Image (cartoon, rainbow, N blue to C red):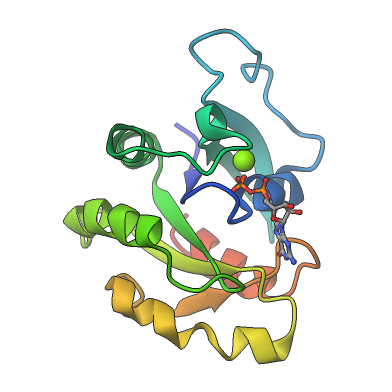
Amino acid sequence: KQNTVAIVGRPNVGKSTLFNRLVGQRKAIMDNESGVTRDRHYGYGDWIGKNFTVIDTGGYVHNSEDIFEGEINKQVKLAIEEADVVLFMVDADAGVHSLDEEFAHVLRRYIGKKPIYLVANKADTNLRANGVGEFYSLGLGDGEIYAISSANGHGTGELLDAVVANF
Ligand code: GDP
Ligand code: MG
């Protein structure tokens, strides 16, 4: 089975933007609009010669801030079952959100079982990237918080270096 990375997090943090940056045009054939795959998108990425599958979760809640406990559990379960590495994305612009805490609560169960990287997106500037320390309160950034900008690519190289080191 190919190495797989899943991106999880509440709506609007930028999961799909990162997915598109990692995958480009290499969206998987299985990513059709049939009922079984509508809640996730698959694609292929590569970094320094290592190939991996990327899963963008959260399709069901596209364009909505409404997300419920059942959806969070489902998204995390999918990611943990299918992925070797989980990227938990939060929004550096918005700061810690109550839904981030709900995701973190579920994800903390898997600490030590799967590598989980805490990714603070929308860190478009150095000033913003330096301000992500508040996310340590989520209890998932023991090693490091990866401050990135999916929009301009800032920090994504360091994140990918860490991710592919698992492969
Ligand atoms: P998702 O719901 O988590 O998949 O989030 P999206 O990828 O759809 O992005 C939500 C919004 O955040 C969109 O308006 C994006 O353009 C914006 N966005 C995503 N990544 C970044 C980023 O790195 N910086 C900034 N400033 N905006 C971003
Ligand atoms: Mg999305």
